[in-house]
Image (cartoon, rainbow, N blue to C red; front, side):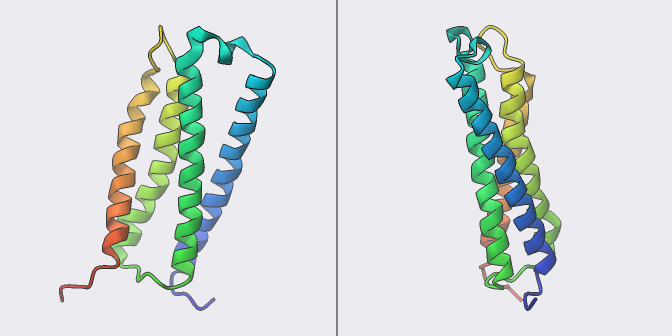
Length: 146
């Protein structure tokens, strides 16, 4: 392997493909719940649950694709990876991939009277983690001030 960032590329490729498998499977399960007209999912009183699960599926799938793209970018050696990126941005991307879809999913499991469950509080933390990771990654293209 010619890229000096092989371990980071491999981590994000692997994480991305497994995440894509998990969230594509979740999408299939949601389609089955819809197809079999399961009231726990489809009843009007469960609209919040349906929305939370859909958001979990969508965010998880998108983040999986981001990991795959990030792995490809790292593998191509287009981006110079600084130690700060490996220490903060890479873990922040992974954390966001658990917190964002996980918060929506847990929020859907614990719905009460049309409000999402307490798991929804993970979503802003995941969103912040994602923004930090994106910012640090975007800064990789900026020239050093040294």
